[in-house]
Length: 358
Image (tube, rainbow, N blue to C red):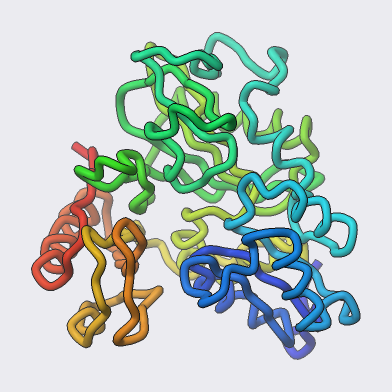
C-alpha cells in the first residue's frame, strides 16, 4: 500500500511517548492533529492514574474524534489504562493488552527456544548472581535496583556487550532494519543500567542468521505488527534474549534517519522502505548528574534533539538532551561518539556513557 502524498491518513492521533519529539515529527506527515503525552516534558502527569488519563481524554474530546493511539513508552505497569485504551481506541501496532504476554520472558513457550536461542535463568527469589528487574519499567530504569517491589523478578546476569535487532513486523515476513549495540550510563549508582543510546553495527554470521530466524518465528507466533526490537547478548556460543519490546523503542531514532517512511510502515500505511542514508548512525542520551537548569550553552552543541527550554529545571537522573551522530564506517562512528560526549560533558553536568564498544 502506498500513500497519496497530498492526503493525510488520520485526523487525530494520541501519541504516548517519553521523549516524543522524534515520533511527532514523523507522524506529522500522516496526521492532521497530534495530541501527545510525555511524562518527561509535560507539566502535569496525565498517566498518574486512570482518572487522570480519562480527564485528559475528555478535555481534548478524543473519543469523539475517532482518535488512534501510537505508543512508545510511559504506560509500563499501568494495566487499567492499557485496558481503557484497548476498549475505547484503536492502537496502531501491537495491542497494549498483549504486551505482558509478549514481553514477559517467563511466558515464552519452550517451543520457541533452542540450543542457539535461550533466555537467561529467571527466578522470583534473590540471588547475588542475578539482576533484579521490574516487569513494569523501560529504558533500564527498573534493572538492578528493585529488591522489594512486588513486580520485581531476578534474571541471571549475562556478561558482555548488549545488542538489539530492530524490525518491522507484519502479516508476511518481518523486514529487518538492522542491528545495534546498546549503551548505558556510567557510574550511576541508583540506575546502573539506564539506557543511554546505541549505534548501528555490522553483525556477522552465524548469530545473525540465528536471531533473524527467531524474529520470523516469534513474529508469526505472536502475530506481531509494527516496529519491534529485541535486546540480546552472545554468551557461550548462543544468543541470550534479554528483552522483547513490542513498541516504538529508542532505536527508532536511528532508523528514522536511515529510512524516509519508517513511521508509515509502523502504522501499516506502507510496506516498502525508502533508504535516505547509508551512514552508520548513533544517538546518545545525556542524563543530569544533579538537578540543573537548562541554559543557552546546551543549545550550542551541534546536531542535538529533545532540547529543553531555557530555564527548564531538569531533575537528577532525568534526560537532558540527545546527541545525534553519523559516520561513514563503524570505527569512525565510535571515535566521533567519544568526542561528542567529551565536548558535551565540558559544558553540562551530566553522566558519562558506558560504551563497551572495544
